[in-house]
Image 1 (cartoon, rainbow over the protein chains, first blue to last red):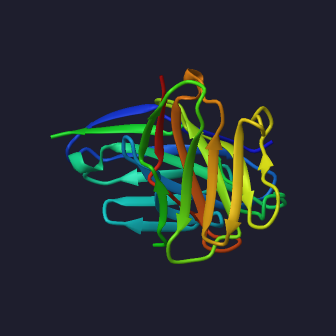
Image 2 (cartoon, chains in turn orange, brown):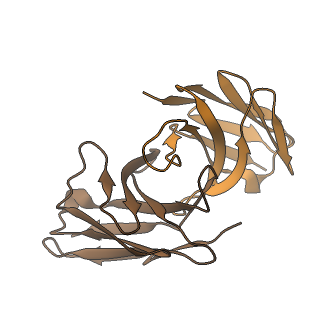
Image 3 (cartoon, each protein chain N blue to C red):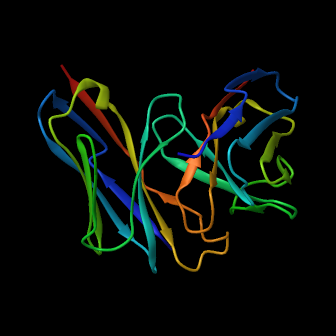
Length: 114
Length: 115
């Protein structure tokens, strides 16, 4: 069974204080690892997809990296508007549901104070 | 990115009534859509996979007769919560991939409150 664990559950940062969010996963065969941002009362917003160990992707203050066991979402010099819940999900090979089914982690609630 | 529209964004209904939630892919066709449920401060739980032209696939523990899914076209899936009870109150979210092996794009979510 695919499993995704995110840590920490909650993270408070001062504006400008860089940090990293962790996503550990166990999957039979990784098809893709996804990062989403979710604001309260909204659906998740797609950020990144990573497919193989060593891959990195960047978008503004966010950078996602991937190893064979975990992924990190690095946040550089965060701003208050980066406050949200960040969700990690994996997609595995061999799923019956058209191969697109995602297994989500519990999320990390990030709060950035000015 | 691709756009998935979910309607309504919130609904309040009386216990015992049924509520229909729509999920539309606005600029692409989706043969598969996914329905999730999210409790406060928790992650998304997959309820079912909606397949265009065929029956939905439900996750273990999800009542098929209570959560009716219809995927009548390549751009529309509906979730009907039948005979709703207060314990069905939750945030329901749909998603759709633009094609096989791509990321899924999510709707805005529907906050259902059963009173």
